[in-house]
Image (tube, rainbow, N blue to C red; front, side):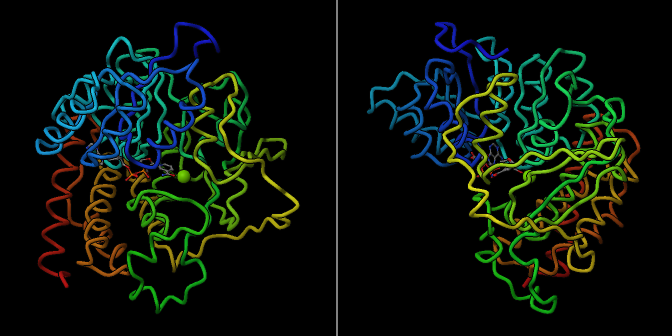
Length: 405
Ligand code: NAD
Ligand code: MG
């Protein structure tokens, strides 16, 4: 339960990835509710100055930094600012702070598979876990939801679509439960179609990372922005929804909705469709996750429906966005194949952002990797980590040998 407003016993929050888009938005919501939330721990990969500023403002007990050089610099800056925040060095501490007894709520806001172990640690410690970081769910959503049940952790989806779906479900619905049990026959997963929805296919080979990162409606980190442009983000979200709502991918229909006003819909067996609408601002799902089952002022301006005027819908174009098919095929086969898909995607997106490959090569390389890396039907942590490592190595090798510009 969220601690009551005005209670001296404020809710302790740890933010994994506090310097990212999700992390900064979480701190912005908390900034407006100091009577309810207390920041216990912040973590970052390398953005020293921002982490220092966050520590000075929010006074967490602990800050975790992953690399040595950054840790020394954070420590030095904090000391000169008179801060009492303790700095811990190394990825192992991410798991440790996710499990701290002072922490009630963990925001999983790291990008990619790097968030897997800390997310799992938070779940195993029975925390309220706000899941923005979708990649761990793609890799082993079944195990994460099982562990949440076994340890009385509360999983709350923060990805805007999954948060919308959750908001459209009955109050007694628990994440990980089968949505058919509450009368749902379809999930309508909306997506804007990204910046290249209308771009002629022959121009896909020339789009730059700068263009790919210019999302029409959302401000996000570089990896998820590229995923949105290839629609791999929607593919990962199909898999994420399969586990959060315990349903096969065939129940999930992707609907391209360029305005990003409806964040997703749920179709019940009687034909009713319930939708959640709101501004394209992650502070809405974040505030929902922090306060659930209550509601909190997120600081987001009201949506002016008159100004929006039109809501459009269309099916996704499979020729333009092969990543949707690849994601469906990988969850259909199951086992560690979604992990391989995710790992290959992380490597190719990084190569694309570093201008080593072209945009149109992203799905091509992922498809090749899915065909060559051996997968296992067992989804244990060990098998998943092994598949992740193998897929990353194979993808790097493939890029080096066949694609490097
Ligand atoms: P971002 O790149 O802006 O921030 C990522 C954060 O993770 C940063 O604090 C960074 O320091 C940290 N980080 C990166 N690599 C790390 C590593 N190896 N070890 C430890 N920390 C590391 O990303 P973002 O846009 O905030 O997205 C975070 C997650 O939330 C992603 O999984 C994304 O898919 C998901 N998500 C984001 C949005 C959004 O609007 N930004 C919406 C839905 C879901
Ligand atoms: Mg999303």
